Length: 339
Image 1 (spheres, rainbow, N blue to C red):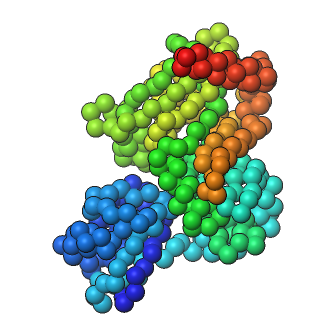
Image 2 (image 1 turned 90 degrees about the vertical axis):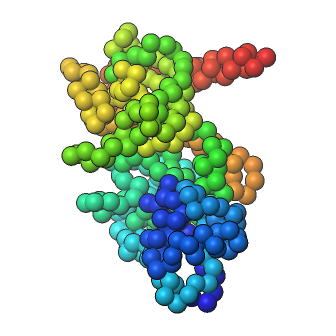
């Protein structure tokens, strides 16, 4: 390779160490040679000098200087599912779920049950449909964050590389405010608080899971507030994740004794309310997001709750108007606390 390459970090490479990323993409490059290039600033991430242990984030750009012929293996190709033809039905559904569109950003209302990316046995996912959202842009939209397959709501996309870098940085630096709504089986012991329980991924016979690990887990913080509650049976919660760990909200809610309704993975049978006419599925919804817009200013978008969530709200007797009143009350509490 005789020229500098700018290689984008794939969505499935988040949290990968830079030296391991090079080992995956350029296996013939020695670690010693990589360290030397890092010291000289020849290898950079989003224009910044970094060390071999730097953890990469999806959408970041890695500068790869000219390499010796034996080490210049081309960067790994993107999966074929990113170039495949999108069916007319999938394209129509995706177009109907656009919440916001401008020259740099797209925001979708992702339905519950649709994966964001492909995986083992998953062939239908948002990432494979993004060609339908290209419109007149020179580039295909890019994912900059994720939602669980069974979580509905706000999903942000970048329409070009510059926007992807800015948005990925906003998520990385916690410059975004994400609001989720959940219905839980059981009611928290306090109407408002913060869950501060470190989380770690563990492998099991049923695949990867996340658990509270006070010794080796990564810091995970979630603010919460009860919007409404039905005795001690169920609660409608507002959740603000301050960190972005995998399955954070699901594990945190289960850990305080109030698993999210329908979350059998982390709540087991306690995530059910027997005898109730409730909607089927995970009752976790990415309600709204506020973040810096790549072109300046601030972008705020919200998504209406899905049908299964509304069915359960009606059955439990929750008042749809309660959220606005409760949010205003919380804002006043915050303003009072600051003064």
